[in-house]
Structures are given as structure tokens and as C-alpha cells.
Length: 404
Image (cartoon, rainbow, N blue to C red; front, side, top):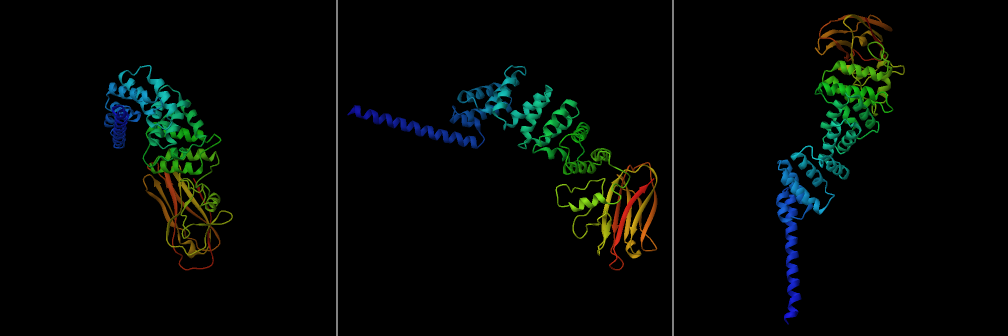
């Protein structure tokens, strides 16, 4: 009889042990979900994830021996735990930056964990310090494709572009059209540091010479940020480069031919309005009607619309003449008012309505002077008012030119 009890007692003990193990594992995973890996280790001392988490916490507290202990124990369970590999290497670095295990350990972690943000960031910085820019770009690309630390990484890349070799590596990556490429151009209104600003300009100008130059949308993001940060000189240089020598006098596009093309594509991907080109409102009630030859036709009863057309210019100091070729009845022509203000001071240099005594094609001239101070850039704008009386005869602006 006794011998028959032994198996049953043994099975009972095994069952109790398995039940206890299950409780311990559940408690351990609960601690992991509570972000308490050290407590989880108490319940699951064999758990790779728990030990890796405890190692990382110890590393953050600069407890390098404890970090090394937990990381090594995690790797005893599995050699494929990226967090444990990274933490083990960094724990050695904390104790001795020249420890030979650091570099190989981080490289192995990087190969196993392209999605491990701390590892890829560390490898990027290490590659930059070694001037291995292609490797640095691989790591930067891995980070930004997952939108990890994108702003910080982009700031680093913009500074790196001041180095010709670094710029070459950046261009090689940008030509593959990564999903973060547009973000590089979105600098915002906050002025960049001097190294970032010069590096970003170098990227944009160099990219113009590649098979994947900046799109109009990308360039608009960049120029808009520069203008809002009042970096007018840089914005003007970049815009000029983008034209590849096709720019003429002021205002740009005096016959509105380019503006007419832009208006026809206003809902498309390349309809962004550049600061040194004609800008206009795009809602149906306020949008200019461009003629087939590029003229501006006012053939409706418009309300008062400020900045109906406007453009930023870069006129030299001195005397200038604004010449406007218009067609229409006097009561319609009187509804136009051109204004020119200095940037960044916003001081007005010209502001008066068009006055003509007769219908037909008419050239109207205004003389004005650009001062030497606080007027390096200017904005020319047109405001229209409702006509005195409605009629079928339309008002046409044929061209706008400035001589000086």
C-alpha cells in the first residue's frame, strides 16, 4: 500500500511546484507590466526580459556592476536580447570607456536590433566621432524611418553637412527618397543655429544638382521657415539657386504667366506659392482670374480684398519707377491700390490708387525711393475695392514692372 502512495505523493508535489511556478511567473510579468523589472527579477530570477530591464535600470543609476550582473544573467538565458547586449556593453563603458567589449558589443546589438533606439543612436554618434559618415547615415536613417528622435537627428545632420564628406553621405541617403526627407526641409519659424543654417543651405543647394532635386513643396517648406525667421538673405539665395539662372527683374513674372500656370494647378502637389513670386488667395471668391496669356482679369464684383496679389522683392537702394499696364474703365481702375512696404521694418514706401482719365490700355507710373537702411527687402501688394458701379467691361492688369 505504501508503495502505491509514493507515486501519488510525488505527483502532488510536482503539481504544487508547477502551480507555484505559474503564480511566480504571473507575478513576475505583472511587475514587468508595472515597469518594475527589479521586482520582477525577484519572482522570475531566470527571466531574460526581467534581468535585462533590471540591468537597464541599474545602468541609468550608474550602478555599473549591478547592470553588468543582470545583463549577463539575461544573456545566459538568451543571446538574442538586444537590451541586455546593449546594457552589458554600456556597463563596461561606464567602468572603462576603452574596454574592448564596448564596440563589438554595441555592433552586435545594432545588428540584432535595428529597432532599438538607444543602440542605433549610440552607433550613430560613434560613427560620427570616427568620421564614418556612411555608417552614421545608416543609423540615422534607421532612427528616423521610425520617427525616433527625428528633430535631434536632423539637427545633427544639418551640422554635419558643413563637412564635404558628411554632405556627400547625406545626399546619397536623400536620393533614395526616405520617408523623413520632407521633415528635413520643415525648419519652422525658430531660427536655426549658425552651423545648422549653413549646413541646411548646403544640403538644399547641393541637392539641386542631383537627380532628385528638392520638390516645389519641399522648397516651399524651407523658404517659408526662413522668411518667418526673417532670414531673408538666405531665403533669397536659395530661391535664386532654384531658378537655375532664369530670374529676371522685379517683380518676378511681370506678365503673370507663371502665376497663371500655378493657379491652374492650385489643387495639385506643386501649387505652393514661393515668397519671391506672385502670391494670391486661393478661395473661389478671392482668387484672381488669369487670362490665357497670363494677364490678371477682374471680371466680377469683388469685395474689399487686401493682398489680392503680393510678392517679396529685393530692390537695391535708390530711385525706382513702378510701371503698371492696365485696361478698363476709370471707375474700375480707381478700385486698385498698390502698396510697397520695407522688410523687416514694415515701413510703407508707396501707397496710392491708380488714376487714369480714359479707357483703353494705359501705362501708369509711380516713382519711389528705396532707402539704404531697414529696407533690404520689400513687399509689393495690391488691394482691390468693390467697383463704384457694376458692368460687363472687365478690368485687366497686363503687366507690372519696376525700373531703376
